[in-house]
Every structure is written in C-alpha cells, then in structure tokens.
Length: 204
Image 1: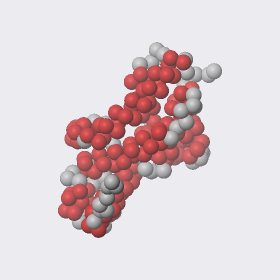
Image 2: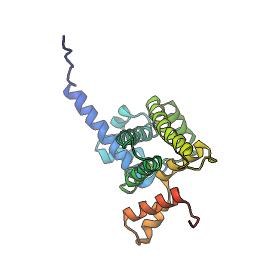
Image 3: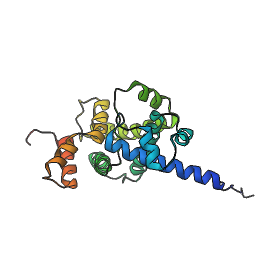
Image 4: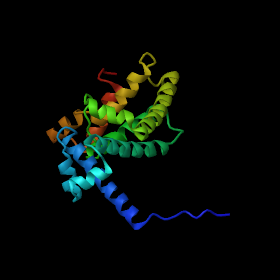
C-alpha cells in the first residue's frame, strides 16, 4: 500500500522561501562584515521584510548565525560524501580544505567570533548544529587517524590539533592578505595556503 505524501501548502512554501532568502542574506553579510558588524535591521532590509517578520523565523541575531552555520556545514557534509574513498588520506584532506577556501573566497563562508558567549551558547544548544559538526568531525578524525597510521601525517601531533588546524583554514586571514596584494589569482592563493598547511615552511 503506497503512502501519499502531502504537499506543502502555498503558505508553507512561501514561509520556506522566505527562510531560505533570510539564510542566504545572513550568510552573505556574515562573510562580508562578520557577526559583530552585521545587524538584524540589515538582514531584514536585504530580504525586504520587516524586522518583526524576521523574528518570527529566527528569534535572535545568534539564531540567524547558527542557521547560516548549519547551512554551510550541510554543504560541507555533502562535499565530504562525494570524495573518492580510494584517494590517499592527504588528498582527501586537501580536497576538504580546498573546498573550504573556495567557499571563503566566493564570500559564502560565515565569519563568526570565537569569544562571543551568547553566540557560543546558541550554537551549543542547537541540536542540528551539534549533530552536523559531530558527523563532519568524526569523518575528518577517521581520515586523520588513517593518515597517522600510514605515515602520511605526523603521528606525534594530537588528532585534535590537526583537526582544528584544518578547520582554521575556513577563516584564515592569509586569504585576505594575499588578495589585497593583487599579485595572485584566487586559485594561486588557495594553492599557497594548501602548501603552507600541508607542507609547512621548512625547505625540503
């Protein structure tokens, strides 16, 4: 016996489209200005709705940021699932970092402060954020463990140190510094950051 899935009502579709527009604009503003400089008024104006209407979807600026983070992490999760399992570990990790840098340069990576207590509290209480972050971290840690066992990654480095080093590339200020010089293309900048991340600075 087949199950009939009810289609969303027109009102539900409109609300979903508005929420999508909100998150897209939050993502853009966070990438351009960062969390502290972004205002709820700016988000509402960018979407073309009243601030009171925006609050019906997201009760605070912190909730807006959390929604943007969940969205980009879902994209990361999808990217990870498409990486060829047969690739060497270091190539898998390079592919992840390259993707993060591409998203960053495209202005689609939310920029969030690490020391904002109210934002940390909202992220910590957001079950979807915690779930997706744990899944991504587990996958990366599994690859890191494989790489250290195989000798592709330095075994003396704690797993968390490697993981956080990879995550840090998503907000690496070196990207902006190199872009400001005008001396390198976006792909060259990505290659330079990858080289320093995975090969270090010592001559080989």
